[in-house]
Image (cartoon, rainbow, N blue to C red; front, top):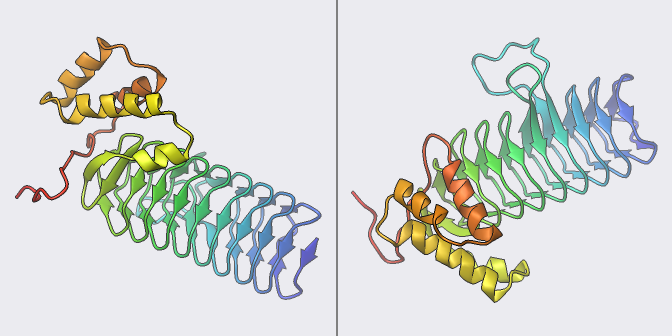
Length: 266
């Protein structure tokens, strides 16, 4: 274990033998840090945080701080749980859950760039990239392999589907179905075809996703009608995944489609 003499580590923390902790970092009680994880300088890990193996936590990051929730009571026992192989760059903040026994989750192999904020009870799956200065309010969920451009903001309680690519400096308050390109303020612009191809999806799989997209967004049907039509259509696993997401959309519904070059509605 390599702990800099200027670091402060609570005696109740459980630290693997080969963890590195940089100068002026603070590790609180009931913290668990797995093998080969490295904390750079001025990192703060507050109590009841679990961090897995092979993570890098950048300078000045704060993980496990109380949520920014006016109803939160300091005695509430909640946590942050982080998996393996994540890179969390400088000055990221990850707040713990807001209710008793709840947690904020970060999966495996995610890349959080400088200044990302994850509010209480967020759930980040695996292989997600979140670029600089993105802000996620409480209870936001981002599914596997999504890519979020820098400076993008997310309203509380919304969900981003698998392999979504969201343009930087956008803002979203509605759910974004999987496999799509999202941008601006609550719009999608089509299928993330390049991302799907890079992810190894076959031409037939990409065609199925395009077929599902057209049924939902370009058929003239409303969402309920599109779901009924999808149930009567022979879709494979990807089409079913797409419409399952739409069916399970949260109370604000899903983002609408806007053709490139079309002016936003007044």
